[in-house]
Image (cartoon, rainbow over the protein chains, first blue to last red):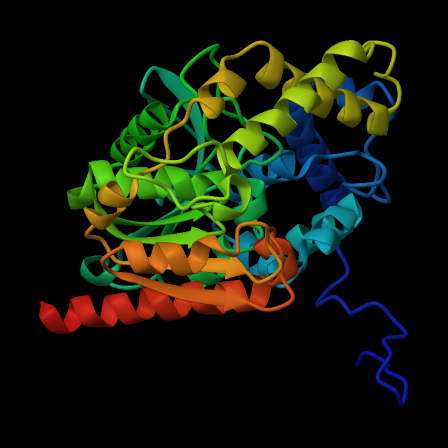
Length: 130
Length: 283
């Protein structure tokens, strides 16, 4: 249950379906970081590590066109389990760019909980040509 | 992903709708000039159009976003060729709906004029100017004296000068991510304005004349903001184009994506659904 005040103001973050397994979340964080470096370039890491609390806009200074390229990489890697367009469609552009890496990692972890994606899954996703 | 088209590497995003293939046309979204790329449409217009079941194709036009930035070819004819080549490279063979924002509207309308057989319909989002406000005259048979394109080129010239005189040391900014981003955006804009023929090509662009507009046979939906500098163009366009509906959004200026996003999405979806229903009943 999420808690709301009588005025409807949200007082707690939306509950997640499941808490992410810390080690799996770390693996996903490392994968997302590698994707970011692939999109932006090595210089992203000159200013420090990409952490769960890093926001795409304020901390990582990701351009909106770079986030589009990141979303494409996420789709290729996890698209068989995670509907990123549906996830992003519920957010305003400001909310997308204001999101932290941890929020994205947790969303992926929750959606992909279960056996690890196999190469077969990946090639099936790629075959959709999305 | 990227596709090779017209000698360049274009960044494209191709979203798939879930209508049956036979009833699922592609909607191509065309962004505006210089400080724009496909991301402005990717987060706004593309998701609702894809959710309504259509395929959506977005690409960064030459020199913009993550597409190559060649030194030349920023004229409208080349933009039309780029569009045709990108659509072909993506394996799309049926006529497409074109939605052009600002300068992207010029590209869309020129494509309809030159290649009507490959166009299903056109939606102009503040995408064409007949500009009597700037010239004091309605356009003559030979086209327009100055106007929107000229003032756009003048603005770009000022920006280009400013960027050239205040070049940043990108290496010194590398340790700060916000400075890195600012430096990258500046460097890309600087290179586009100062190292390519874009400003020259834009300033010599020929808008369609009244006679040419009268020959456009595709259906056009023209969307303008009531507070836009281009607002006077709407009724003129609707008069000159044989098949044009005009919708004007109150309290909105040139940037309809920012000023009236919900109304804009609603108008585009109503249009696509009406055309699809008509095509379905005709089939």
